[in-house]
Image (cartoon, rainbow, N blue to C red; front, top):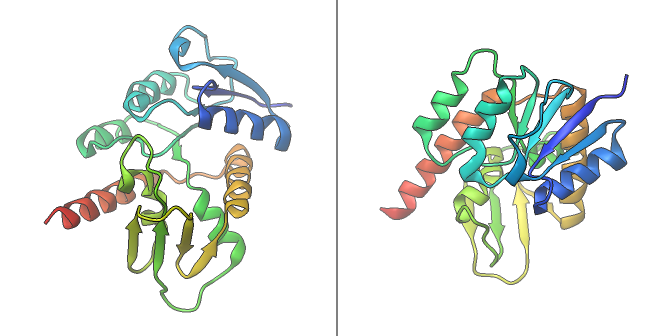
Length: 205
């Protein structure tokens, strides 16, 4: 039977991307919900929810949609407040995962020899600040990582692998496809957020 997946924040940049991936690369029926009206639709007939609203909305959105007892995939970061994150992760029977497209690049490229450095450099920073925007780069790094934003040229290397923008686009597709099939990473969420906080604190010293 065809699954019905609601994309919350479907009018935003990432929401449009996830809705298009679902429509073109899965057998799912897509329910597009813009973030301004995200609490006005009954979600009982949906099989899962992708939250692509601004970060400041994530906690309320997760709490609201968790009442339907269906899987939730949330854009990163979940929140920049660790206490709030711990509280939401303690919700009973919460089936929560977080977008991490880099995991799918690593998974398909195979094992790496040793622990190699991770590097990111691009001038553009999103709404959450550089380190939070790079949460999955930091979270996927096995060894040292260097996060900068002083180059006009997008450069990314994950554990020694150079990544290009086509890789990134394909990885988002794999991420959504595998989540629909049952991939989960709830245990990854808290350690990764803590790792970002540690990196920010270290930079500020």
